[in-house]
Length: 285
Image 1 (cartoon, rainbow, N blue to C red):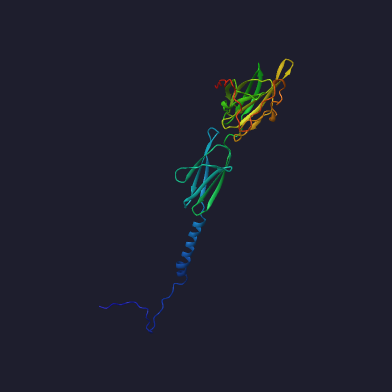
Image 2 (tube, rainbow, N blue to C red):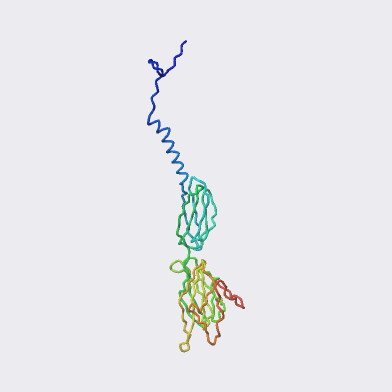
């Protein structure tokens, strides 16, 4: 039984060289792998994470929560969130999400760094929280009692924050604080009563977000009548604190004549002095 084998031997006595595939062979085995390798390398070196930031609606205008979601083929090396330069502590959630609590308006900045060293930074403007102080709506003087109507349209007034400084820089707590009705802008109106100091009274009111409004009240005689004089509004944001010198703000005069010289006003960072008789009961309806 015979076997036959194909051979490149030519009848002329020489071996014949197989023809080359030419350009397709070079492209398939050399150029294409080279391009594929460099494309993968370029992707690995330059790939950046994709970030999305979502800020939830607020119910109380005091705080809200922001959620950051990361999309990337690479592991995350670091995550940083800050609000106007203040570092915020993020809590890791499911998969590649992070949550952070926000208590004031500002610019929220999020930065994510991939394991390959590439980073992405995005910004989100937060402006849904309450940063407006309460408003003094009306003031009347009757039988030595100063009656005020104040309102706040978002986080609502904090009744426990209401107090006044008299002409001797002594703290007075309100005789009563009553919620009267809802305002036209869905806020709430409160009626506050103080025992009036004829030499001057400086009233402080805060909302639940910490925004503070201040106003001075003095009286002068016109015949037998005591006429109420109302000073200009003074406002203070939630991030600042401490007492303020009423005389320095154009409210109660520092020199009270027969009432005696005013005592030292509370300096920044200090609480107003305590009253000796304790706090009158505050009634909230």
